[in-house]
Image 1 (cartoon, rainbow, N blue to C red):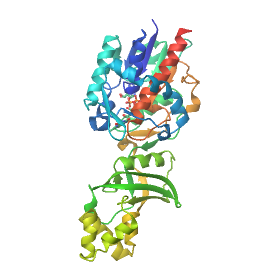
Image 2: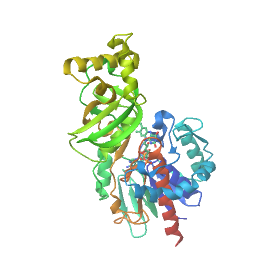
Image 3: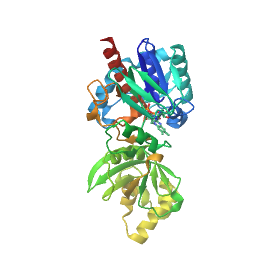
Length: 387
Ligand SMILES: Cc1cc2nc3c(=O)[nH]c(=O)nc-3n(C[C@H](O)[C@H](O)[C@H](O)COP(=O)(O)OP(=O)(O)OC[C@H]3O[C@@H](n4cnc5c(N)ncnc54)[C@H](O)[C@@H]3O)c2cc1C
């Protein structure tokens, strides 16, 4: 029986081990933590936003690659979820969640299926992998293991993960990595005046410009943080900045339209309503905190009130660091891969999931890619081992 190793137990490996074990391959997962799928469990605030319908490839970095990796999975997605017993629902924005709204239930389903199919789990950190003529040798602290093929799915460099260890493994394996930047992360900006805005959430139209050229615009909720902004639409904006891999964001500006559904003329009528003083009219719009903020800039800095409401501008200082981000933009260089997804210099190693230089927007795109890329590399492994 052909032996396949999976490095990591994120959604990529869980899906891959499920697909190959049901085809009769002997599968072993290596996991450095003491439990599997830790990140899947906390994803989507514990609710696990595991897919997006429809899945639009424009939300991925390296769209063509993402499409190539995921197309086949999309055709079989429902059938695979059914086989796993995974019931899902889509919210009004197309975000797919398990019906139970619990990531831990998704992990249980995988665990049950893997157990039934005889998948072995070794809770050890992989320290090195070397390519052999007919397979791979995997090293943990005290042991060596030989497998026919290896799915390499150690995830990105974000969140509270030991960055140094991951990087060291990649270096030992001579992997070519593109620059790594935090994505889906809060953004540090120039400061706002009214400290009471911290913790406040607003439904806005958020845009990003550089030298008056618009690079991003999307409606959604922002959250004011002590030193910048957060929230889903901010995360999506951070994707655009992350993919530029810049050391300095000078000239990049964030524009907030606090009332995207109210036209200039309607706004004028509200602001200058003759029955109330200006302060009260402004407070009626979005509350005291913003009213104070607008009044400050208007009175002390002579800013135009309409611009403050419809085009409130903050300078981008930086992205929050990798440890605070949900996803890493950057990873294994796609040009270091063979057509079947294996590494050119280690042809029995198939990287997939977030360790690849492909990242998606928020809304289920990243777990979807982990599933889809696992399907792609597993099909390649099946084809190769059949020959
Ligand atoms: C807070 C948070 C919320 C998120 N929410 C969502 C969401 O709702 N929807 C979405 O699509 N995406 C979300 N993401 C992103 C998503 O979780 C990841 O993109 C996805 O889990 C990547 O899957 P993966 O299989 O490639 O790697 P991971 O899930 O990161 O799994 C990699 C595994 O490999 C293990 N590992 C690493 N190195 C070694 C080693 N040397 N030896 C053995 N094991 C090793 C790790 O311990 C880990 O368990 C979120 C991320 C975070 C941090």
